[in-house]
Image (cartoon, rainbow over all chains, first blue to last red; front, side):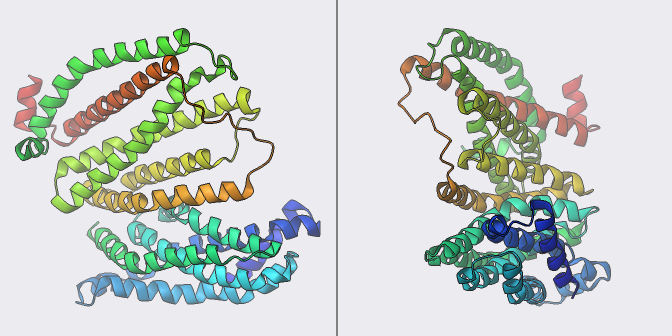
Length: 200
Length: 243
């Protein structure tokens, strides 16, 4: 519920900052929605492992004999369902608020679905590396932003091209490739990162 | 050859090697730097289109080239540290990060200074400039991660993982920014095309690139010596070397 309110408030801030002109907002809508997705992924990722780290259950998971990478993936996917997928489901509402052409809404939802998965996976890697660190949230943002730039670029390109009437499959395919790469490599990186953080 | 590589892993050997290298090579490299800069800034001919304002290329391009290469040096050091658990590789990684960040910053600033008379703007969101900016963030991320951990060994492992993740991403980032730019290319920016550069301008540029590489290696070695002094301050071999 909180994340939905966050989305709504940030989407409201943009017209307040940029002016209410529908044409301008419509042009900028793909970018705005994607930046909102990115910001929410950054804030959510910071909290991915911290609760488990604080109460010691992360250590228990690490020594339990279950593959740590899979446990971390389960955590990441659960968080994705709560943050990324909810954004996908409410994104048509925001798209209408920002006067985005309705023809682009399917591309928007699909690109957000794949893209937020990528963002959650990269966020998981960053969170695994910074979980025990003081002021880790700021550091996490610094680490994550370069890694998530391709996702942002592909996502906005997909939606912008769909808004112009072109076929956006190639951008979605690229994002799917990133997602697959993330699904395969993120468990390894997260397990390594979590073990490093637990050693600290 | 493997013995030589393993020797680099020994702090006393490396410290002596670095001291000798710096003592002999630093003056030569500094002289070469002065030669390269004077040649490029004073003696190379002015450009047909840009006049004399192109001369900042002799600082800008070497800095950019070495900044890009430096990231891979850092990532490779991280790989060596994670796989073979050689502590000197940790020290090397820690030494390279701020130097690489500084070089990226220099490249961005000199590029911006070059852009003002040439393109009329201090900053443009061009594909290469944006990629360099993201490279700066990657470097600063590694520096920040090193500072965040108290335990040095754990910090080095975390940074090694981060550098490797960044390495996988650098080609992706570069390509995606390229595609982003070609989609949104603003019509008003005209590039001086990649014309074949004349020999009279090329040689000082190559000299400066070589000099920057050498300077990079020397500065990293200086940083590593400082780190070794800090870490092994009371060791017997160090007290012997310092006299």
